[in-house]
Length: 582
Image (cartoon, rainbow, N blue to C red; front, side, top):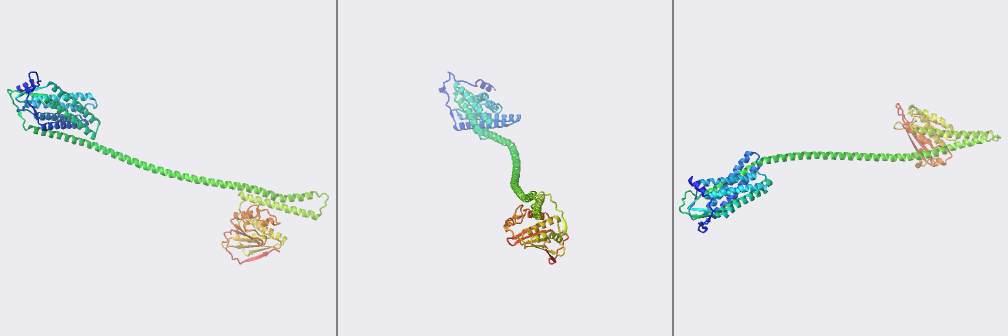
């Protein structure tokens, strides 16, 4: 204990006028131990900063305190080991030993310096230089106390004195380099990750190791040893201790780094699991979004197709309506032309008999002197009667056709004997045929042929056909009426004449209102141009059909087919009888 107090009193001695530096003992350094000491300083700094990373990443207070203690042990122990190896590399020309108590106590400042540096990195806010400056000052001071307390533990037959200038430089170097290393490490740990943070930690560790090494060897350079054989030497022999201390320090620091990396990996595993779970959630969300997008796309495509189909239908409907409008417009124009033609025809057809009636009546009204004989007056009355009948027929045909066109003509379906009905019509027209010297014959079935149609319409149809046949047949000609049943069970009435005939190209024309063939126009026979159109309409209204064949100069054949009654039996065509006009 007395030796310890004596060491404290003689802790630091500065070179004075009474000491001659030229008389100091020669000093040399073991290069291998120097290199090993610097490597341990850098390695210890890296281990401490790696533990500081774990401390900063921890969220629990006890974890931070634990990492702070481990880091302080690593950095302080590494710094003390570097100092001890540097002391062993310092070789004098006399034996050297160490005071055990002082040597052990010199570890305390190193531990405190390590705790301070890790506290600055792990707890204080990054980027503030003032925090790094305070920590670096305390760190440098702790390293200086550790170094010079370790120097005080030397036991040899000499006394150590220090150059005050170099002594001050060593402390300043320790403070400056420590401040820079702490500031760099704090910035790197707080702002970077991945490869950048490891590169920054390596740089800060190198800077801190260099700071510790420069401070130590600068302090050693400030030391001057003067021999004093009277000094009592007692302590521990350190031969072979360098290897053991260095190996133990490297082993501890390696274990610290491995522990740091293992903990970092273990801490990363939950983060990776959370990241994997998050990515799975994102992938599931993306899958759901893709599915929703696909459904939306399908719905949109279906809507587009549906709308396209609707537009196509609308376009088709519009085209159809436009076509119908065009047809309606054409029909309207045609109807307008037909109306104009109808009025023109009607005007002409009505005026012709009406002018004849008026003219004959004027002749009779102006015969005040009674110069016309009775025969002359009688002939005028006959002409007036003909003109009146023609006008009445024309008016009746127009009215009948108008009723049919307006849909006002009703069909009263009846079942009657065709043969009897044809015979009655034959009796009505054969008188007119006799007057024109035209032979008219009727071939009829002995047994009745029952048909189903309107009897009034049937009479009008047949009389119109017979009248046309007689009207356009020259005197001495023939008109033949035949009744039969075809293979479909329809009743067939055929009217054949030997008249002027019709061109085949004009057959369709004669079924139009007020249209007559060229031969009919050249004929002296009168006609309204409404008989065949009216007849065709009446036949079709009663479910029958009408057909006309003709040859110019030979004659015309008109065939009418009527529906049979439901009770009609198919008869043999051979049972017939023939009637002829007188």
